[in-house]
Image 1 (cartoon, one colour):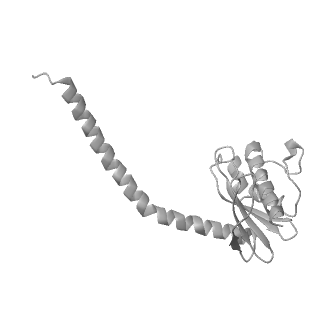
Image 2: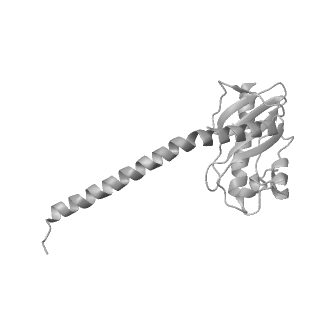
Image 3: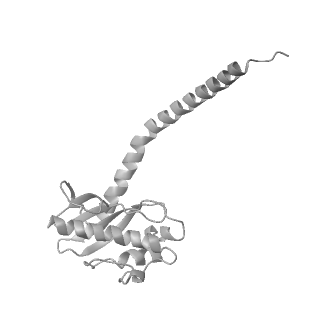
Length: 183
């Protein structure tokens, strides 16, 4: 048995690993190229459904809105009010949600578009369950700066999901502030 030169052996291993990595990277890029338009289409449909849910009849996207918090990502307006898309940080990542505000500055509703919150805890905020509906419906009609009860506010937080509840409240507050800035 011949002894291989250590440098050549390492070079052969490195080149083999490089070839495998290049093939896998190319395959991932191809899959991403195929799925990206589909994912964007689904996200656009979810966003439009959320706008319709919090602002019946939908609205036109506004440019030039102001947001000091950095949470507002888009604003849609109609004759009846506004739909404000916000993205506060929850316990396990971003919570993308739509907040409906009427022309008088009162909340018309909220809809959570996507999240990565813990199932059974923070995910209840977005669930189509009695608890999820109850949590979201307590915002309707309010117009002042909000806080969860643990912070001296009027919003009942979800059991064992105070961070998620605070994130939703922060998003709603950012939406209300944005609408006030719009006039």
